[in-house]
Image (cartoon, rainbow, N blue to C red; front, side, top):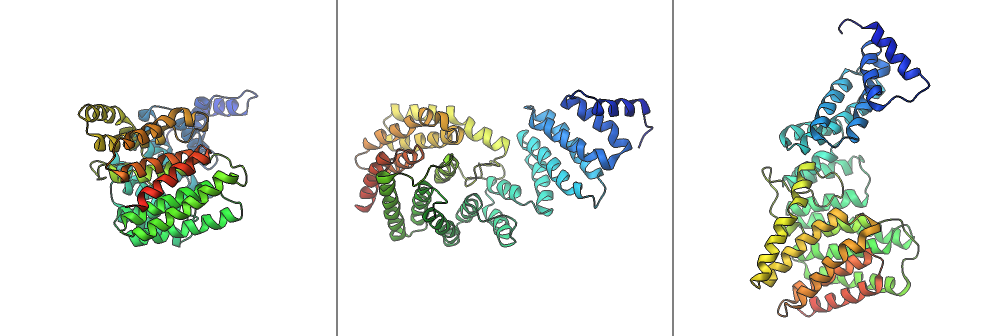
Length: 390
């Protein structure tokens, strides 16, 4: 500790005790001063203020400086202080977010490893998935689940199953996802979960079964999904639900993972199977690829390569869903055309019923998200008929 500036200490105390509300910047400066003379009381406050300043910033370079200072302040909190672990976690999260936004993945991963060592393994699992290290990510998911660190929610179970499937462990992935589906069925029967969620899960299960070489199980899942959609088309949801669009976005995006380049440490991809937690650099590259894909689609349309065009347009639709799919106020306005165009294009592929079935399924699940269940049922019934006729 350097020489204490008692005048600065007095001014800081007066500022914080005054009748006015100091700005966040003034609070940070005051806590910096007071943390030197009363570290137990003010280091936690300094970490909180630095983190809040970062959350309000849109400049990764600024966030990096704030995060580094927050980590240094959190490490200065006395060992054994109840405030230390939580403040250090918060500071490390600020720091790693800034590092990822700046593309400094190796340093950011090291921070995530420190968080994992402290019992916060979720972020590291997502980072490993971004780099194609699915088996390692799935091992962290399993460890968290078995130790009761994370509840068996939709988000955790989908992420775990996605990482198992990414690692080629299809039977294990189906086991985890089946456990989630059983829970969703039970909750829906008790009116604790939306039937639309059960439908999305059943359709995703059918895709997983197809990928695992189990076509009979895939057909069974589709038939059950069609039954649920028929109920929704006839009677609607048994009760109103708050926004559940994130469930649809997550599974739709995950369904497109196989169409994307393989994730590697050198060329990371989003951690499909999660709705949040994408690293800043990965999200920016993924969404920023739309102009390139649109240019590719234009070339394919010009040359009449319609099958490839359908695949590229679906990749664009996935990105649109990730960008806008969780916003109910402009959901149909911004997304509807992607699915209508997908079906229109697929109908031109008269010798490719599988692509038409996929486009119809995509639009049916979008309709279910938009709570227009009759057209959802009609589309999916046509898709099921096409697939059953193979």
